[in-house]
Length: 136
Image (cartoon, rainbow, N blue to C red):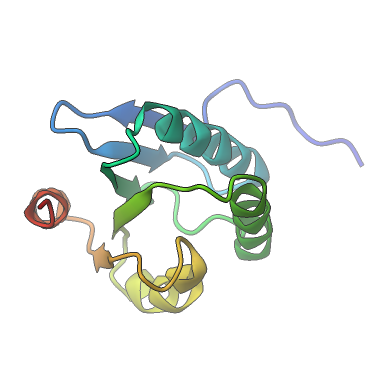
């Protein structure tokens, strides 16, 4: 079986001026998950030890990536990189029904003490406000 090559990004990472690390999934495939993992490492490199890493994960255009693969890759990443910064993560989804599913599936990422909140497709400003509101 031959996999199709892709030339467009599956996951785009940008650090916003307010310090939030925004990960935007454009596709929901293995390659997008692999790109996200690389971006997580990049975000960790620019996060100072005393900082809380604010993450905005936008899956409005892509939907959920392959769940088993994502969980496996995330667990592998966290096992290989045990000294993770403290994180505060907001997720953007559409349609809102995905929030219910994602809440259960994504609860494993970042540990039980990682604050996370799920937002609907038109709530990016609310997600950013929630992330910034948690700063000490």
